[in-house]
Image 1 (cartoon, helix red, strand yellow):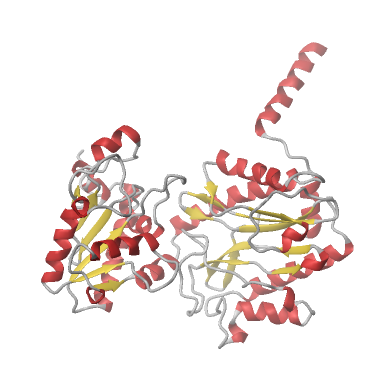
Image 2: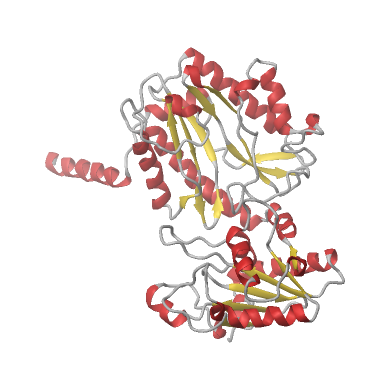
Length: 452
């Protein structure tokens, strides 16, 4: 039977686009125009990853493309005019051809402009490579319409998308007053995770738990931090995932550096190791931190501080629910960050808590979301208290990923141990790679044959 609508993997994006158009009409009722969303470009030194909001609304993983939505719902995908050349170099799950438009929930798939050399687009593109899209935007602006797109006035969001807009402004009569930023609407949608997203987050978290266990078992006196990193990222790769952010393996004084990335110091008995890692799997990110004793046993002082950090996390998790804030200085009695600091202050350690209590999590590690609004059902957050005393070479952080539900939170990473005695037991185990396990089985079988 001929396909007459979006294939299952594109159904949810079709629904999301309808929700976005509804939100735009509600907020900008009288405005006319089109919605334009830009994909990211490829960077030679990195494996391509689609921009999160573009992926959230399209499910398309190809770089350099642009989506245009009429406010009445008609949707067109513009692709670089190098698709024939690109097919020689890159494989795609579903070719971006007009024949597949309906399968992807689109009305049409057409070229952005004239033929471009090579097999990819670049940020400083010439006008002719975007000529078809430029003509359409100019037509909309000339008729008094607006360009609804992702263009927030922030220092770090949607950087490539804003660079494309700046480039296009130089090619046409496109001014700031013609552009309406819809990033807050998209952020509000992305904050509330549906069950399909929860399932993907669980998958990323499960992979990260395997990686934390591998890290713990690779720890030992004289082992390099990068060797621990290699053991844990082996689990990422073997699970079809990749790091959601640069893996942090900081031992001794390095454990007190919040975003330590050198990972080149030998581990020493008596020191602690902070392992802050996350797998990205199917575009969703985990973020879990554990702190391990190199020797396999905490000292009395280390255990005292470790248990204090754990108590802080458990206290904050018991308070987290809809209506609370991650951080709000105007309502400190409802702010998880301020309550964590008060908890530590009463025990004399507030000055050693150097960062916030947590952040939103999802398609990005520090996911979109308005911190000025209270927590709501469907949010995913981290809770990650820490104590860092550089003069004692003690850095301790414990971080888990939580789902905000009606009456509180569900710890999505509950399967990863964090009691002090369980952490010690993890380090005391020996890490065995899967191929080594197979070798052990083969040797045992050979011995049995010989004995027989």
